[in-house]
Image (cartoon, rainbow, N blue to C red; front, side, top):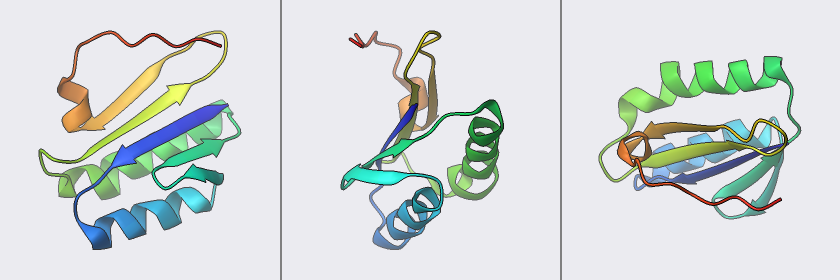
Length: 91
């Protein structure tokens, strides 16, 4: 499973991003989506975020994709990619 969290300041960009995520998963909270994981789907998400959204992000914006499961990786975009502090994930 993928858990996608985001904090995007611009209303129009945030709405566009949430509609994009709605195509692949379900909203758990306003800025949190749960998406069933597959390698192909993860590649699609990362590519689309990188090509379409990341260039529009400001220092106020961040997106983090958590891979919940055995590998437990995080993929960060926008301001979040500069945050090197550890995060404890309990499954």
